[in-house]
Image (cartoon, rainbow, N blue to C red; front, side):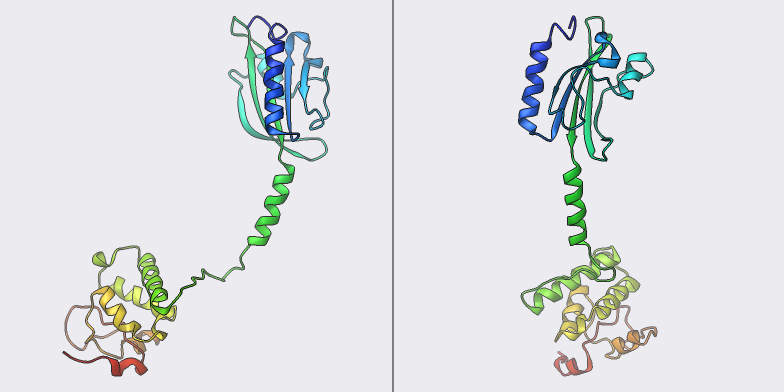
Length: 239
């Protein structure tokens, strides 16, 4: 462009479009530096945001570009603050003449103070007490057990097919700590899920709950089964 003044009708139309689209919380400012930086504002929409008028000066960022200290100084979505403490999300693009020299700037300042306040209220309302943990609401105990089995796999960090003996024990320990074996026949479900023998010693859970190492009385290499509680033992039968 030859000058900002020559393009003023177009620039003002663009400013008006932006202001009408975004509403009264958005200030749009046009700076024309040849007019003198101390009164470079030549057009402004929604000037109540920063309180500036036509004839006001530019900001410190524009000085750096005008001085040549900063090249290609366009900046987008940065946070600024007004003298009365309101927060603005701002963007600035610098306008150049036909020789590529910066001659002014078009700036957008969106007042996000209300959004920040709302965000704080929402965070306070959604804040969880530490130690509360995640809660899963199931429609029946089978769905609940499926959830716990899936979570036990996540805790280990491997698929069941890639778990070794110790990792399967860790998954079973997680299930026990989460109370999974309170559910009737959960031990048998866990045996099928992890592909382990249901003939493993029935005292396994008793030992792991006491912090002792699990033993295998059947002499195989499989992980001892996640046993049902003693009340469930009558449900396990041999083939």
